[in-house]
Image (cartoon, rainbow, N blue to C red):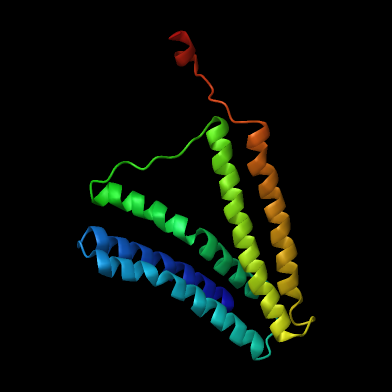
Amino acid sequence: MILTLIIACEVAFWVFVVSGLAVRYLFRKKQLGAVLLWCTPLIDLILIGATVTELHNGATASFFHGLAAVYVGVTLALGHSMINWADRQFAYRFAGGPKPSRGPRYGSAHAKKERQGWYRHLLAWMIGSAILGIMVLWIGDAKRTEQLSLMVVRWAMILGIDFLISFSYTLWPRSHKQTNRDSSLH
């Protein structure tokens, strides 16, 4: 049931984002668009509430119960930037806004962007891990919540790999490679 709810919440998140942006830009109803965008955190509350309720009613935690907390952590830490990205894309395509920048792709500016992405991932991990820890403490049965504790460890390993990749650009910045055509011009 929780996997189905996670999928439904992801779909609902994007339905609210696209609806909010469509109302804002296509129908010129900025306040209604903002209300729809502000509904996205309610999706997190529904998901975590259903997860906690199912565990409280005696279910043994599965990988998907842990994934629900990861989903909430990611949307709380990254949701705003995802909505901003979608807003820029929508404004460009439907409202004559400026073409969105892809951001720096080379050098120290790219390295800084990668580090900032890792910091957001760290924040998502901290939020999700706190939610997982609270659920483990609230249920109070280590056997039933073992998967929740394992999720913190699994995610920490992914965070560590992301750290190595993200910070590698600080030590070895990506350089702009010249094509043969570019070098023949000089």
